[in-house]
Amino acid sequence: MSFELVPLAVLMFAMTYPSRAIGLLNPALERLPGRALAYLQLVGPAVLAALAAVNVMVATTDGRSAFVIGLPWLSVVACIAIVRWRQNLFLGLAAAVAIAIGGRLAGLH
Amino acid sequence: MIDGLGIVVSAMGFGFVYGLTARTVGHFSPVEAMAMSLIAFGGAAQFAAIGYVASGLAWPAIALLTFLLNARHALYSAALAPWFRGRSFAERAAAAHLLTDESFALAIAHFKRVGRYDAIGYWYPAIVTTLIPWNIATFAGVMLGDAIVEPSRFGIDVIFPAAMAGLMVGLLTGRREVVAAIAGAAIGVGSSLAVGPPIGIIAGGILGPGVGLLVPASRANEEAPIGTPASAGHFGMPRTPSGPGTNDPRPGQRP
Image (cartoon, rainbow over all chains, first blue to last red; front, side, top):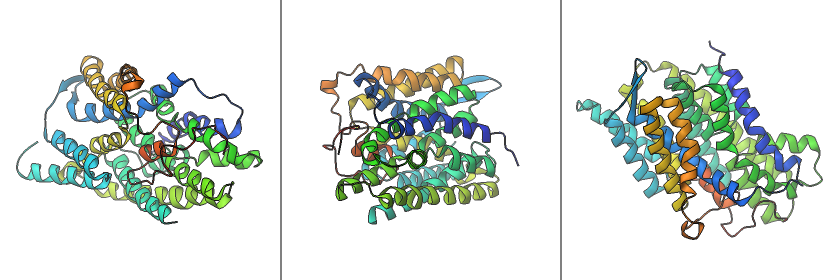
């Protein structure tokens, strides 16, 4: 049983707690400038998009990265379309998994 | 109460997928996955951490991205502060750890409905509808993930990128977000091919928002300014009730 990432959990807590506490513990704090607020609003979409895209488009072997096209693209695109259409993440994930299973049974990768 | 039940179901499902993915993709041990859910308790940031760890990102970089991804909580915190006026320091400090998109959305809507701070109105959504289901489901997910020998056979390897993309869709509340997401993905992939995925993810996450800001505010068509209950609905798990609406007071405004 590994405990290696427990300190990382503590580090993530240390990075998250101040944001959660700053207003509640220091109500007099001035609000952030508008430009900073606008930037923060965009961090979520950018980080999540980067994670998804890198995960399905880049494969790393022996320290070298290569662009890949494969079945996971279809799964992710289907998930995006369904979440956009139905506002239901679980439906999107179910479709993504179903496409991956079906595609692999059909010999696609 | 009905909204709370919706959150329970959502937290259970999402926590389960998190636990499963943490085990099968990030190779987290049950203790590590549970530590994330109990100590960090960060939803999307926890999910993102699976990708960071799997791609070999250095911990300081993970810390930076976690800070940026969760910085919106400062605005929720500021919005709740007037309602917590007069409460003890210890209570406010404890409440801060349990402040999530979901607990904020439910609590602020409740406070506005009753017109005052109400302890049950905060602690019930924070603990009963979010913290407990999230952790129980994480445990169940990581235990099931432990039993799966070949994740790709069951399509589990696509859950992580699909979940990241699905969560991202929930955050697209205007043109700036769309541009930031496209730029983040393009910069992330381009940088990953040039210097490796760890740098690519950081570059996409930090530079993408800068590109999004190039869209003039007058053309952004923003539906849910950050810090409002409407934005909590978008940042929270899909199907999270978004509260009273986008015309609510901005964070820090007195009730």
